[in-house]
Length: 473
Ligand SMILES: [Zn+2]
Image 1 (cartoon, rainbow, N blue to C red):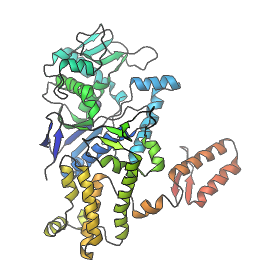
Image 2: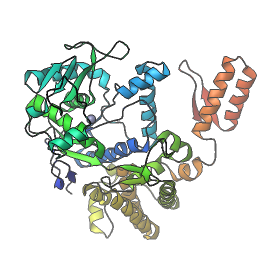
Image 3: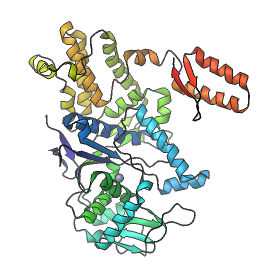
């Protein structure tokens, strides 16, 4: 089984050859944390989560390092801080925590590292200094700029010509620039704007240098896969490549560049003014996280994806069918633990039953998630009709395959009965909020009443200095 991926650098599907199979390294551009994640942010998180799961299956869990950064210094964050009168630290801590909770809910495993830009300012300054020393950057007027003409093959990823690049980057024409295409590595901060001391005065990093510095810090000068959305190819990824390659004197920053397609909502570009702006946080009030994930994986990652209510309903129906098969085979032993069945792989090859690699094989073809999903359905129809003695094997294939996609994470009981019977986590949180307010107002009768309501729902509350926690009794 050979992993093939479409490498944006080469514009074609090529075999994946890691630099070191015992240390497979992937960097994915993460969110800028100033607001709830929307479905456009969720798509790369889910897509590259599946890439990481597949790499772990192929090379071993401990052999794979998945890094996804958190951009916690940015002019949008600064603007949000000014509007709300809060510090950027408060806003980014709160938003990063909400992002992690949303990603947990849609089954995105925590990457090995989630570095935050503000924790790596020293590395960014060091890289800027190195670029200046090597003649690829210059300081001017409190800024540090990358000098694009200093890199003869600038533009290899996006393959744009120079005029297109200048127009496409919407780069500011500024008197301190030597060339109109030059881009910012470091910029000055006024007294109201967050900033750090640097050789060029108090300032803050540009966006592109964040990823170049953090990728080097965790993955080294050249690594295997760099991922992100299609919209990042230019200028963000082009500029990451320019900085990293010129600073390190390397031919490549990453050997494989993978880009996921755009997300539209109800057939249109998502925008707050059109009223079709879907955040994961809001969607989770109505839909299980797995439904959102399923929809995000239903199109090939490079194709555009339309995120719609109809798509959510269809995803729910398809998941219902998969869970129904698990419900009907609840007495069939689960043989998902490989150690319990050492001959499982051999046994699978010998019968007319797809092996546990059936789903992995689909994903190895440039992460063909629609094919993988159709194979889950095929396994379900096999499971429904197979002889009793074949069922454990098919069920194992189904569960192992679903795990690669991050699906079927619940039990059939939780799926069909957990959410309709009993009180939802959101309702529990709301009641806990009401109870805290009642206690603050010293209305202990009301606080006790809410506690009893929850108790009747089978919810146990435990108070601690960090606030109350709850569990189902
Ligand atoms: Zn990036």
